[in-house]
Image: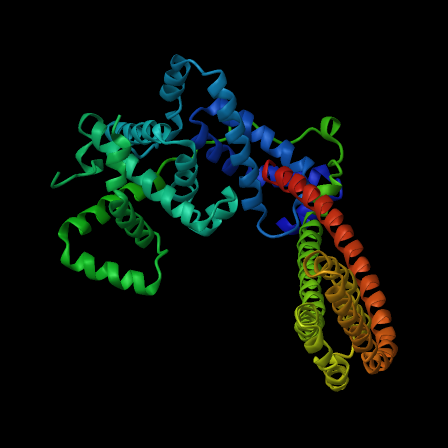
Length: 199
Length: 298
């Protein structure tokens, strides 16, 4: 059964049809939430809330791109969770432990230990810099540069104008570039360093 | 502390960065793309910046995907059927209805304003014509009246020789009736007013004459004034052709009154429609804003 049919069935109350959609999109939603939240446990909570909200609000989906609609629900849940966490900040120790454990899955059987280390360091550096971005810029970067959505899709998901998306993307990349350059000399191998000339 | 001032100077740089990023993401128009490519051809630093952005984009794109820690499927026992959300289901209809009501409200308000302007113009034109005709009548009356009275007071003989204004006035009404047809009653009143005013004025002058001139002379003054008063009265009566014209005008005034009554009915209906539309618009706007807020917070 294709996506549109599954959505129609789910809208009629067929939870089994909806769960097929969950299986199809849960990895996408989890990864987007993870990149925005920066924490796998928070990302799991947001992902679960996203699918619950999506199921309860299925009647409001009037056709079109279901994936974009689902990601809009996910980003709004991320906003809510980020606001909640601002009121009750998480301890940094938990975050450090999460970072050390999170990249075991990156190990490839054909990859040497040095290559694997470089990839892990790069990913860590990028994630660290992503967390320094303001929420709006982080979301645009995750959707655009990490997940590969174009400006129009990002504008639709985040309910902002195209101009705002362009502006946020530009500022986010400038900040990421500066952040990676500042830590690149210590952590990144030469191949991954962003060389700056002139200034 | 002064960072914000530093940022103000970077707006041209911000625009340059935006253009560069949009170029990287294929979101520039053909003209903008051409301009930027010309700049890139001339500026090595700009090319280097573009390469740095391209590398960053690739690095972000190559971030590994995490596997889901567990399954997120919903438990049917816990979640059952989706909730009914009627307000959000009719959101597109609500949006359209609000827009349509707003357009209708603006249209009826504009219609009402136009009608008010037209009505004001229509009442201003005849009133101006009225005023012009009554000014002529009053203007011609007053000097004659004053001259008759003053001459009567000063020189009784000469006062008698003052030509009767009636003869002059007889010529006037025919012209007047041609000029001012409609508010004949108002013209009559204005014509009568000087005549009525002449009486107390004559009395005052008589009293003054009595005080100043002595009895005999004041008797002559009184006779002159008595002559002048009927003349003024005859002048007022000489307006009877105007009355005839006025009667004719009155017959045409009846349809005007009917027209005015119809106009009032239309205006009151328009007002009711405007109020009803305003209430409906307010209700729809509130519902639409609530639905929109709920949609955006999904």
